[in-house]
Image 1 (tube, rainbow, N blue to C red):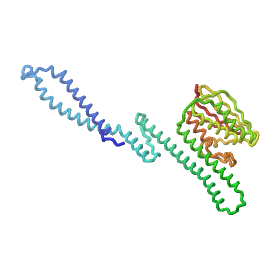
Image 2 (image 1 turned 90 degrees about the vertical axis):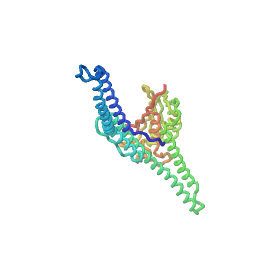
Image 3 (image 1 turned 180 degrees about the vertical axis):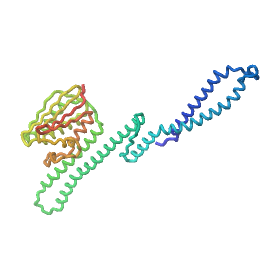
Length: 361
């Protein structure tokens, strides 16, 4: 908002330096007067007519004191202006960097030289903030581009199917197949949209926190995914006791469900297992989801929580094909609840996902 113009910080410091010197000079003159001149006799002839008296000394001392005070004032102004400029030079660099960042360039860094002081700490903190902002903006731009691409794909497929149906003059063609394909594409688009909205909500952290039992959420998610597991010949096993944490029951249930669905879908063709365990360890609520499956290369693990990053080994084309947001949603929900997510490949194949959340008494 607009503000009235005022004195610059450099001018304020200059006036402060000059004022300090003027006050110090005045105090020095006062000390000379109090402790020296007042003890000299004050008469027209002086002591025995030969020594200087107070009247003469004051007449001689006053012009010299005035010149000295004027010199101190000028010296304070000039020296204070120079010293203030040198002291505020780092702040000027930080201000220039802030203006550059405000214009949209987040790649600029201050990188202030010299020893550690208050300005150096401020510059380093500002550089760290710019680095985080640049990374966040790049991530958001990449996410927006990927989301646009993912949303455009089902819409383009739906448009193509509708165009084919409109141009098809054969009444004998089975319209049921077309409707089934449109429903599949539409379901995928709805799922992607809901996942994007949920991801945005968890990133903002605007949810009501309540006491939640992770063991109950694990049982509910396992019951929901049991038909899918039985269809694939996978055994679901839920163990552990009451494990409470604070957060959104809806988001935490989605977190557990995504972990279990990921463990079921990316498993062995038959005879696989998924184990879910909840426990409390020293003030931390722990949820572990472990599954069998093909061996995972270590370089693939860091990409599992990135939105829309589906490696060849992870991509699916069946009815349970994901949108590339499953583990990204899990990571976002865990982070919004002040927790951590650790993904570790099992030596025999499969993945161990460990979620640690703050415990609620």
